[in-house]
Image (cartoon, rainbow, N blue to C red; front, side, top):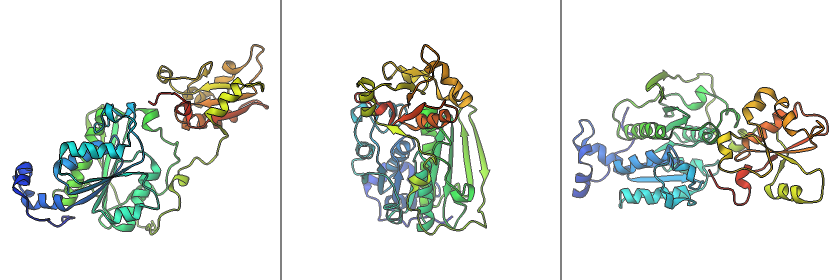
Length: 385
């Protein structure tokens, strides 16, 4: 494929020294480096995948980089998000990423956007960059990126990780299939556990993020064969790579406009009743009775970090298997009567909402189930993990 970017101005002497290992590469050379210096790249996410992508694109000499992320650095990020340090805890990830880029290259031009990629800004951001690298961690943003890429004709380097496996592909409008050719509709938000629930091997982020950065350089400079129409699957436990050939769906209607609300498209269909941490605290300490019982559906190791006092514990896996029977004996009073009020909680509210739906199907008449909005992280003073 042809190079995506035309070569920029001649390199300075200092740049020639810095990028000398690129300049000596057959088929890359001075032209390739000048293409990188002229390139504009948008990186969606400064987390597990965004961290190695940003490090390698800055080190490679990409001229202008924009990073967009609405999250802040948490202690649980440091296991894999190698851009950030303990000193960055609580800071916006996009700003921390910019500082890390300057530590690597004091002349780097990285712009931070502390915010979320959404239907209001996606088209402008994609159209103003030569290439986009999507390191997001949710279905809504991945499909938004795909659709914005298709509408603007912007090549999209795509990657995803979960537990011990990662995937990489390049979706280039007009050159090969797009994400919607493979999976036309956005899956439910809770159809696959996220990394916080399912876990992720920290070093896997480096493997997949580095592969994404490699694809970005190949597309920008027109070297090698980018993974257009191919999907790379890496299994860290087996140390094995699998490559699948992808094809366009001739019957799919092309994307010509963004949806009004991608977050809504990914929302769980059946809402549940929620209660805030403040409301729960008032109900448990007030005179109104019966006070709600509190049920934790997280994993055992999470309880070692933080839990709500005087709660009950049944992991979500048992509830998925046995429904109300999994909690009936735990929540019953001394006479075996079922509870009148139950508030279910997890880390951030996703698993507890699922548990409420599952339990409601078999709960006795008169038992009200609610989910703690925001999970245990919404409780004042609770540590983030």
